[in-house]
Structure formats: C-alpha cells, structure tokens
Amino acid sequence: MSSVRCQITMSLDGFAAGPNQSVENPIGEGGMRLHQWALKTASWRRQQGLDGGERGPDSEVIDEDIEGIGAYIMGRNMFGGGHGPWDEAWQGWWGEDPPYHTPVFVLTHHPREPLEMQGGTTFAFVTDGIESALEQARAAAGDKDVAIAGGASAVQQYLAAGMLDELHLHIAPIILGAGERLLEDVGDPTLEPVEVVASPTVTHVKYRVVN
Amino acid sequence: MSSVRCQITMSLDGFAAGPNQSVENPIGEGGMRLHQWALKTASWRRQQGLDGGERGPDSEVIDEDIEGIGAYIMGRNMFGGGHGPWDEAWQGWWGEDPPYHTPVFVLTHHPREPLEMQGGTTFAFVTDGIESALEQARAAAGDKDVAIAGGASAVQQYLAAGMLDELHLHIAPIILGAGERLLEDVGDPTLEPVEVVASPTVTHVKYRVVN
Image 1 (spheres, rainbow over the protein chains, first blue to last red):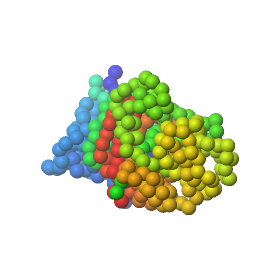
Image 2 (cartoon, rainbow over the protein chains, first blue to last red; image 1 turned 180 degrees about the vertical axis):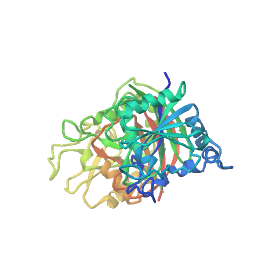
Image 3 (tube, rainbow over the protein chains, first blue to last red; image 1 turned 90 degrees about the horizontal axis):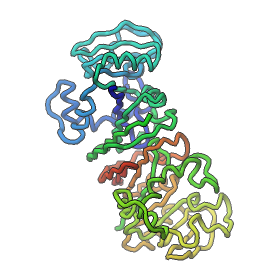
Image 4 (cartoon, rainbow over the protein chains, first blue to last red; image 1 turned 90 degrees about the vertical axis):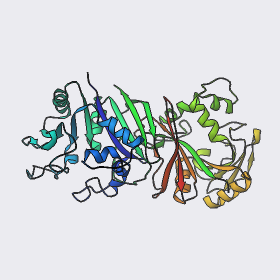
C-alpha cells in the first residue's frame, strides 16, 4: 500500500506557525521565518513558475518531498477563509494555479462543493472526518503516496490516529517563542530517524512512524 | 577566549526532562527515555568506569562533547538535594567519583562550603548569579572551555543572556508530552547549524550562537 507522508517545518522550540494567525499573517506572526529556507530554493520557485533560486540539499529535499505524491490532505485552517460556513469567494491562498497539481482534500465541518483549479489541483471538502479523507485521498492517489500538507492540527490528528507512515521534519534554527505547536497531543508514537540531510539553514530529519 | 558550550538532549517535542521531577525521578517521569541513546555508548560507560558499550557516531559525539572542557556550571536542580537551605549530607547524584573530573559550579540561592570529591571533581556553590559563576568557571578552566551542564533553566539563562557560544542538541526521536521545556524564555537568539551527526537513535545538531 502507498504511504502517508508529511513534510513540515518546525522551529527549534517546536512551533509550526506563529501566534495570532490571520488573513494578514496566515502562518501567524513571525511564521514566515519558518519558511525562509524553502523560499530561496530552486525547487520551490519552480513550483511557483519562477526561475532561479538556490540549488543544493534544501532544494533536493523539497524535490524529493513532492515526488510521488498523488493527493494531499489539509486542515481547514491551512486552506483558509476563516471559520464557520464557507464564503464561496474564498478559493485558498494560492491563486488560480495552486502548487499542488493533484486532488486536495480539505478537512472541514462545513460542506462545500468541490473546486476545480488550474494545473490539475482540485479541492474537495470532507466533512466526515480524517479517516474518510484518507480513504478518499488514497483512492485519488492510486499507487502514489498521500501527503498530509498541514497545518499542525491535521498532522497531530493523523499522527495520533496511527495513520501517518513518515514524518519529514525540517528543523529551522529559529526560536518563535509562541504559536502553534506541532507535536502536541499526538500520544507516544514510535519514531525512527531514517534519513538526515544537513544544510547551513535547516536540518531535515525523516522519521519512520512505527504504527 | 575559550568557548561556553552546552550539550543536552531534547525530545522531539522540546522537553529536556519529564514532568514531576523528584528524588525517585531526577529527570522527571519518563525523562530517562531521553538518555537511552547515551547510556548504551562506550564513551558514557567509560566515564562511569565501565567496559563495553556501543562504539559509533553517538559515542564519538559524547567523546567530542567532553573533550576540552575545563569547568562545568549546573543549576541547583541538576545537582539535586531538594529546595531551600542545603542538607549537607547531599553530595549530588553521582557518588564519590562524579563523572566531571573538573571544577563544577552550582547555581544556588543558598550558600554552602565547597565539596571536594574523588577523581578531580569539586563542587563550588555560587550564590551571586550566572555571570559570577561564568567568571569563576572561566578562571578555573584556564584555556579550556566551560560547559553548561544543565538543567533546562540554567541553559535558558545563559542562552537568554547571550553568554552561550555553542548549543549541541541531541534530538531524541521521542515525544514526552509534558515536562520541562528546553528552549522557553530564551529570547530570539541567532543560531547557525554548523555540524550534524545522524544515528539510528538520535540526531545531533551543533548550533553556533551568534551573540
């Protein structure tokens, strides 16, 4: 069976987002500091349709993380658009051609018709829980892997439920001091570090989750 | 000038000790899980006067961490013996020949005469703050480095004060869920990962602190 993978950046003090997330600060105050390492890479820029950027270990790690993904699952907060019933004008943060290029399943308590974007990305809204979302994502992914895109709460739920096979942490050498913790309320999973890639800006550690 | 270094194990969720530290559980409940990787090594066993143990990257990391240390500083809680005025019968957790073999400066609010142990370890009790302890430790260390031995609070104080030059984190792939956080109340230091050593049991990341 294909794997369920998650790759996410965490500050050294354990946060995956800064405090006070809002439309102005989707990853919370200071949260963009987490992702500076990625924004500089050739891989990330290519996904946004941009030239240039740094090649090297960080870029290669991103290439590897997106390779072989057939569907994504994300939490409502990562898709954005506030809480409660949907404002149908909201189509996510990523513009008309989001960087997923696969089906994306959004966990939500509020039903909404699917959205078809450009470039192969579709957003489907799943209201009957994480297990159902995973089943649908697996079906959509075929023999490819499913990625839990984030945010922290979605990762926590899949990890706690024993449904995550691989956690690829990008450990950023920054102290956020406050925000949304990544590894809270996840129980006591058995994690095995299976691959470490070092760079001057971030440390990538891939953990196999023994479920 | 010689460096001020700290090497310490942190769980993946950011704890340097488990909850409810006590004489029975000096590193808190579950806290010993943090140190399983070290206890197996040849280096650690040799420090305790024991034969055997695993050689390899983890053991080499410990060798490197103790090399060139001329004095240690530790918090009162790491030395143990409870809170408040000293019970003079308490001589630390480590027996008559502690594994430091250098002067050790213990941060405390309660004065106490120095203790001379076997094997070159002396414990001096410093009541006038972390800066004074560092001055005394530097003087005792000569051209060797000073190590902040722990616990979390002592590390936090030196890091927040801009007095730490190097933080060597052993990131253990375990989730403690509760306990004493390592990187709390440390401000916003600039950390540069300068060396990463991977092993199947723990990930060692050495950070240079830009003060």
